[in-house]
View 1 (cartoon, rainbow, N blue to C red):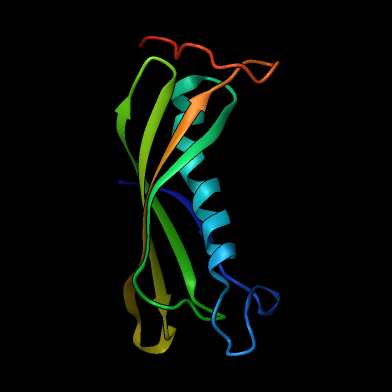
View 2 (cartoon, one colour):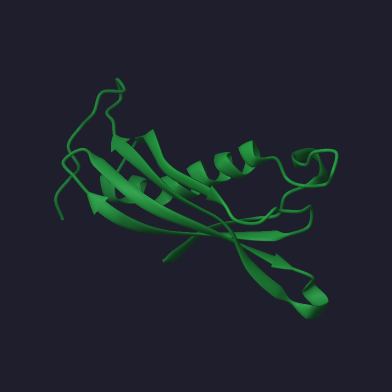
Length: 121
């Protein structure tokens, strides 16, 4: 697993209970998940499917989130990635917990938005 993104959610990202909106977390996972495919495809990629998304723990304002990704599969035009998200809580007595994991598939696209082959090597 490779660290691809770190971010701290802010009050604007939370609901009335102080929990971070699931949609905000999904957007961050999408960003984090695209890092390795874009590098492998050497260009534009787009999300074509979210194959699995599991919220394991709530995320709170002030949690420092670390997004780790690993490539699961590289096809002719697509790349499937697994993303795990960990929250660092309570800096005085640090506690780290896995809060989310997901599998996403990205497709390499050209300038017109059409699928293109992933370069070899």
